[in-house]
Length: 288
Image 1 (tube, rainbow, N blue to C red):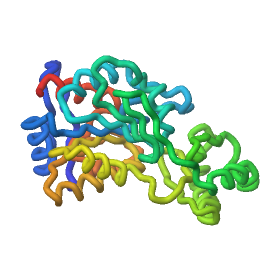
Image 2 (tube, rainbow, N blue to C red):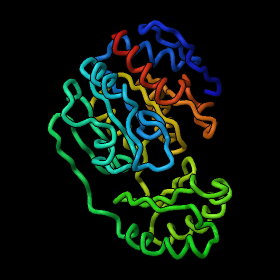
Image 3 (cartoon, rainbow, N blue to C red):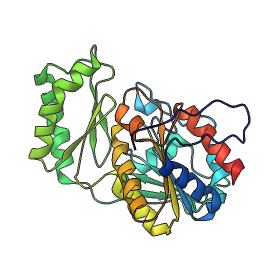
């Protein structure tokens, strides 16, 4: 795709920014023409919720749930696809028991878990045995690496993540830990997924692209919008590209961040972080 466009500011709630690519314009046109057969899929952290130093304190943008509730009844489904446990995303997003959100699902752990708003039900598989082994080995590895100061471990159930954003030099700690964490993951049948000052160790085959493709095929969607902000969203961007070649139009939205230039360059449309994502959701709800 190559080119992208930041959304232009406009005080009108009905203003829809124009995607900069032909494929993106086709995706948006298809969504607007038949919203009842469209899937709107979104990452959580950095897309619906601002990035914060402590992920436990992350909460959805205050206007996110109203925007989702306005749009959800008009489309086939809204899917929040996240690396977090589904229940954590539901809690931090405030998605439970919201009128209008019956058409929302949360695909947690990159699709390994699923929570449905209509029923409040959660499905989750047994954890990969390598996660427990990695969890036990991480404290010693961090201490031995010399990059442990300010880094911390996030427990994610089916995965475990090491954050470096609080380290004295976050990027240096990230670079120092990447190789030993990749080696540790490989020895235990896991992979490392790098993100914005975070390295996540998780089972292979869990990614947002696979989750998105499964869900689009499940719903029989005729168009798809995906919005994300991080390296972990690249597989979902790739999935939309594949769906396009198969005849399903799609729109790729980057929740703007200079930390992930690859995502910006592949996007059809760049908006100004969660604030811009929420504005886009509101304008879509008005437009359809």
